[in-house]
Image (cartoon, rainbow, N blue to C red; front, side, top):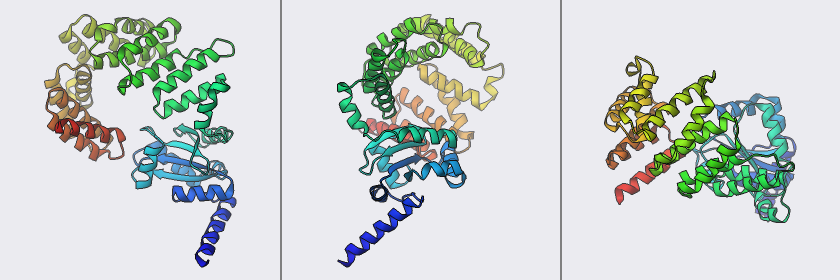
Length: 392
């Protein structure tokens, strides 16, 4: 009886803290208890140590009045993926690798909404205010969509599925959004392609199944530079992986045409890249394409570490010039400072070694990359994949 009284007292104290506006929780179990007692929803924020936007959000949570006012409407649970509960909940809620991630749930832990990124207190307020309008769990909304389909709901569910990396389901919801467009003018061809391409990259879909979606983008995008440029990049990347680079000529040409004569610096760079890839993949001029890429970096490209790394990475992506690529990447890794950049160089070295058939060396470099950036889920996944290859 005494123990029961103590538990009730704790519950009342927690509820009083929430109702007073101090709604931070230390654990998910505590957040659920606070949410149940106060009638509020739970806002989990997932972050990692090396994320500048996460640091900005954390600072605003401590000092920004607008941010704090927004948090007063929820039970706030900040989670770091380097901590045990943060890592566990990250897997459970399919957080992904872009941070910070905000997930709104009810007291049972059912997802109501989620969004990624932090650009300031006011956009955060707006995102949270919109999220709080949805009191029905996402799972229920997906289950009931067929009975009451609307354009807005299809779009909302498509974005949610894309965020949780359920790319095939996201593509299907974008198709439904296309069909349900009130005025028939909505164009989600690129959204469909992007999600199908991600599914293919994750080995859930064959390259050939992505081709029709890419062709639809070409036929519907008109003069949309972003869509046509990204389609050329997407299809080039997928085709290289699938060994079907002979299929990408029309996508490269669309990218070349849309960026021709552009005054935009990035589009000019894209234009040159597409020309070189056409030379490599369509004309079959490997030596010429490599020389053209190096020349694009400037006359003194070989004197700068960043450019040596770019050549190594470019060569790995196209599976050419791998001996020189390894030499360049090794030079950069030896001289790079610890941190995110060095982790990327070590990952590239790992990929080069794997492409050259040296899996044990690939594992060693990926272990080093993971130590440089232990919060990167992708590195840990790659390391596990490589270790499995060694065991086979």
